[in-house]
Every structure is written in structure tokens, then in C-alpha cells.
Amino acid sequence: MTSYKNGTPWLDTDGNSIQAHGGYIINHDGYYYWYGENRTDKNYVSCYRSKDLMNWEFRNNILTQDSKTEEYRVRTKLYLTNEKGGKVNIERPKVLYNEKTKKFVMWAHFENGIDYHCAAVCVASCDTPDGDFVYHGTFKPYGEDSRDCTLFLDDDGRAYFISASRDNADTHVYRLSSDFMNLDKFCGNFWQGEYREAPAVFKRNGEYYMLNSWCSGWAPNQGKYSRSFEIADNWRDLEKFGNEDTFVSQPAFVLPVEKDGKTEYLYFGDRWCYKSLALGVSVNDDTIDYYTKSSYVVLKIQFDKDENPYIEWNDEFTI
Ligand code: GAL
Image (tube, rainbow, N blue to C red; front, top):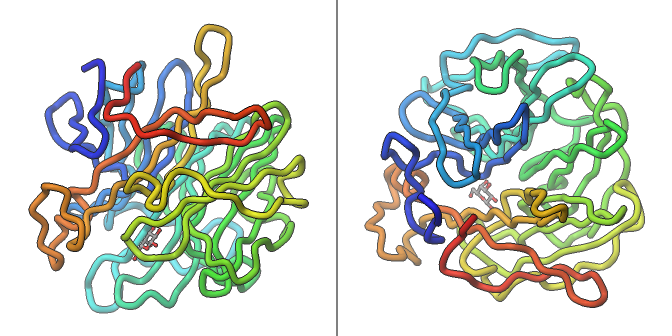
């Protein structure tokens, strides 16, 4: 295929709808790898691969209820099935490649699948981008709440973990240790009491940009952005991004793509399926349709004369 109709099922090369919600894309050895939530069967996180960002080959369910577990340095809780025998929740998985250890390291938001009170992170790693990841368990960063999250890899090889804390009220920025397997520093908390979720960070012309949403569960709301010349400080006040429901989407991540010697920035959002806005999809609120029929919105980020980012609706994402 050469285009994707925003908000419709995105089929992989086997004809199955791509389950990579709340995800992340990295570029490694000539391929893009798309990681994201897969709530079918025993799966938690799946990985797809593409050369052109359009045609995606399913590679593996890289994290499942049966994944191998292994404690790594930090004392963590290692269960992948909860005390009632059900699935836990692993949301917004992000993966970075660590040049030093040659490992692919995943960070995600963890809940126990029974209530929503864990507010913790979890970490997994693998020697290949799409192999079976080993689960290293869950913990709370410096004892703090951590829900919607993202990773950002800076030009100097340092990586940062950004997440919603204090019951989602504030946004925290942490620096990762050099092997990306732990936190190394709490850098700061921002936008106190503004309940920002779904953070997505990118860097352009030496400046950091962060997109996020407000906190309204699966229902979309007004996206916002901020800018700073330091990832860990001096973030400006939030400004509006997109329209009042961010074109019925919530940020997942931003992908920089080189094109004709220029970098373009692609906004990837999740269009979650939920009962008040079925969008032509028949969804039963009590079933996993709720998640598995969710789709995607991909829009090119544009910049105004003051370098502020904005998006306009487009029916199709084309390459
Ligand atoms: C959203 C969040 C999702 C998921 C959902 C659960 O606000 O962005 O990642 O956690 O809430 O209700």
C-alpha cells in the first residue's frame, strides 16, 4: 500500500490489523520497528517491521504473559499474571537501542490489571529488535507515581524517561543510566496540576518539543505542546496543538524522518475506540474490541514562522 486512511484499521502484510497502540518507532539497520500495545490473547507488546513506514510485517509478540523474567540490578516485582490469574496492563511501551550494551531496552507503564493504583514503570530488554524480550519487572521511579510515559534519546546518547506523576497531575522528567536499565537522576517536574498525559518528545534545530494530551481516559481532548532548549528544565507554558480533540487522537510518539536532505516530523496518534464515539466501528465496551479496534492518526507536523508546531487534518497518510 502507498497510503493509510487515518482512523481506519491499518493492516499488516498478512492482512491483520496492526496491534501497536500507544507505541513507538525506532529506525535500526535499515528498518523501522514499530512497537506497541497488543491486548489480544496472552500478548502485551508486539513488534512490526517496515522499510517504508507504510507496509508493516508482523515480527513477534515480544512481551507476553509467558515472557522470561529476570531481575536486573533493581529490586522489582516480576509477575506478568496478576493474583486473580488475569493479565496485567502494560501500556505505552517505548524501546531504545543502547549503543554501549547493544541491547534493545523497553520502558512502559505498568498496572496490575485489577485496579489502576500501581502507577509504576516496567522494563524489559532483548539482544535483537524483535526477539523475545526478557521482563525485568516493575517499580515506582524513586517511589513516585508513573503512568503515561515516553522515552527520548538525545544526540549525546543520553536517554530520558518522561511520565505523568502524582496521580497524573504533574509531568516528571528523569535521565536514564547509561545502560538504559535504570533511572539515574530525577531532573524535574513540570506543569504542576495540569494533568498532562501521553507525552511525546522530539528535537528540532537544537530545541526540544513535547506534545501531550489532557487526562480524559480514552476520550480525546485538546492536545498541547511545549518547547525548551533543555530537556530537563525551562519548559515553556503549554500551548494548543491540533484542534479541540486533536483530530480524535491522543499522542503516541513523534517520528523524525529524513526526506530529501530535510527532516520531517510525523505525529503518530492513537484513535482509541470507545463507546461514545464509535466512528463506524461496532464496539462493545466490555470486550477487548475496545482496544483492538483502535486505529491510528498520522499527520505531518508543520512549523509556523516562530517555529511553533501545528498539525492540520489530512484523510490520508502517504509516503
Ligand atoms: C488514558 C491513557 C491511556 C490509558 C487510558 C486508560 O488516559 O492515555 O494510555 O492508560 O487512559 O483509561
